[in-house]
Image 1 (tube, rainbow, N blue to C red):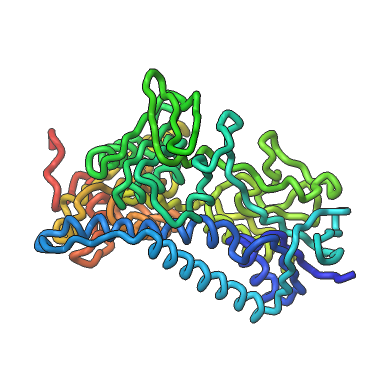
Image 2 (cartoon, one colour; image 1 turned 90 degrees about the vertical axis):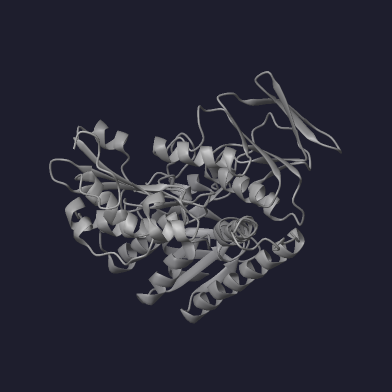
Length: 459
């Protein structure tokens, strides 16, 4: 029987960094994966979807750039999918090479506990583990009221298609649903989002949501239906249709994007004494440890923050905790990037969250329309917003919607983690002309001293 210091189940963005970090620290490491290195993120999520989104954005922009009147690009969706597959294959190969270079043993199969420190792997062997890290991620939820039909798919199945349907219905107005909607609409598809809650992306700042929805509806032609469920869904060889309130909608394909469930069904958690919550997510403490002292859980499967980079951070922290025998808490300040049109970046608290804790909130906001770079490149939709403690001027949260928002949010994350103040950001010189100047201007705006914005009324 093979014996390893650390065994990781799942080779996604949490699992493979954990394996590499544990190996770097001198541990003997095995990494078990039932499908492909890189997990859902690399193979059927973040990377393939962002490859499609990048091309869709370029296609949409190219048709609208002033001075390119004779430019009329044509879409070859099958070629785009082939390019996407090439990107995935290249990155997957890179992960495999990194694992091999660090001496991690990769094992193909499905793992399940036979006891707290022993796992059986289908088609392979039984493994003894000093410590185990569970990084099995999540799977798409498909509501039981939906009929089984080839015209009704989850996000993974959609990414495997080599054609783009002319009419898309997307069930769910969360991140995945909105990203897919913007991508398809930018490529010319007719898209309808159905969200039973009162708005899309309800966890985000209300002004961010309003700006995104306005752009989605008016600029790229997405129909957004909120406040009512999709019911009486049926599908046949020609279409899929359903009712939203008193309206009947019809499409060529229905993409289901209503949430994700933890992938724990085959782990045999009961044999290791591992507890889960009411939704099936594995319960962990702030250090990533489960109710079984030698077993940890990271990433989506622990239900804390379902983002790839959160999983990576947790994986590295847990690997260090195990091998170094330290007690370092997992990071809690996690930026989020939403690849809609326009992009969104958020980190820290919203105004409402800060106020709910009793903080006297101070905000600073600056629109991209006031930036020379944004006007020059034709990307004036959106704004940045700081949320700060009025008493101390300390930064608590940041929100941005607009071009390159998913990159711009990194500066804000560093500033908040470093406990900087609005004044310190305002006094930090930002290069001109750049979109990042918006952070400096927004900090000044909070104090009523923005140079490139009119003074507030009464000042």
